[in-house]
Amino acid sequence: MNPTPSESQPIETQVLDGLALANEIRAELGESVAKLVAEGHRAPCLAVILVGDDPASRSYIKGKQRACARIGMDSVEHMLPASTSQDELLELIAQLNADDAVDGILVQLPLPASISPAAVAEAVDPAKDADALHPTTSGRLLAGTADLISCTPLGIMAVLDHYEIPLEGANAVVIGRSNIVGKPVSLLLQQRNATVSMCHSRTRDLADVCRQADILVAAAGQPRMVKGDWIKPGAAVIDVGVSEVDGKLVGDVDFEAAQGRAALITPSRRGVGPMTITMLLRNTLLAYRTRKGL
Ligand code: GUN
Image 1 (tube, helix red, strand yellow):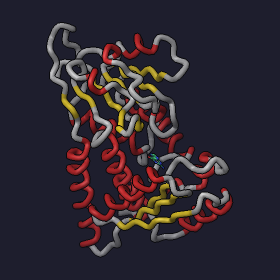
Image 2 (cartoon, protein in one colour):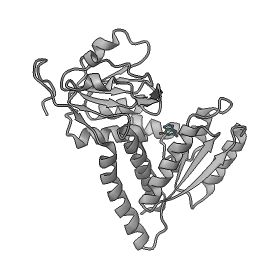
Image 3 (cartoon, helix red, strand yellow):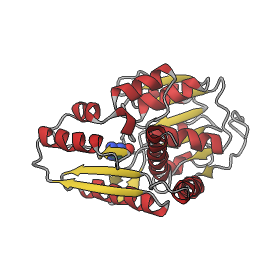
Image 4 (tube, helix red, strand yellow):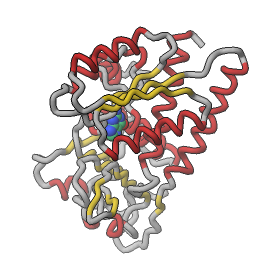
């Protein structure tokens, strides 16, 4: 793929089939789980916690549990009412930390306003930190020694590698600086020798910064904020945003306007989402292997 074709060249935009790529990786993970079980070990187990009854979160959790089941991984769910106190949630996490049959713990976000996401992230045993949100886990990422890595950033890197997008020396622009996507993906790109600009709501001349991007990661949660003419012809565009506008799922990038400009784009549906779930499975299996020495 030519990363910098001239403006006049027509560009055929590849649209990622995130589910197809996710299924390829899940098949490999499933083989690893089957091998462990055939050797007489138990299957790895992910514990998922949902506080409240947000329908979108409920659906995400079901998707994660379905994905576990499909590769032979166990999962247990803990559905707590929205009235759950922070102390009650921390007590449950402490029980799961102590439970040898649980290998990964995920607390679905967002949480009710009365519960501190930072306190919850710190309560999870770093050895079971499938979501990679504990400060010890993110500190290891900063130090370049992490094995458990945030799921969406890991999924994004797998997409870029699948399409053999050159990273070394590339200009990567990340819009959004969340702990769960923007910060960790910026570090991963930088570790692969990209030159990374981490942008946010106060970035000056954002459109001009984006126009320099060989790799553009949009993770701001602002529907269609990235316009077609912000995209450098031939760029790889990773759209992490999923918003509902007029009953339709849209990303942070104007998907239609990106056609014919981007060399690669990820759609809102069957884009990065299935890759995130796949990396959750990967992290849970890795946490299990590491804790059990397998
Ligand atoms: N809510 C939306 N995406 C995620 C995720 O990747 N992890 C958690 N814990 N909550 C989320």
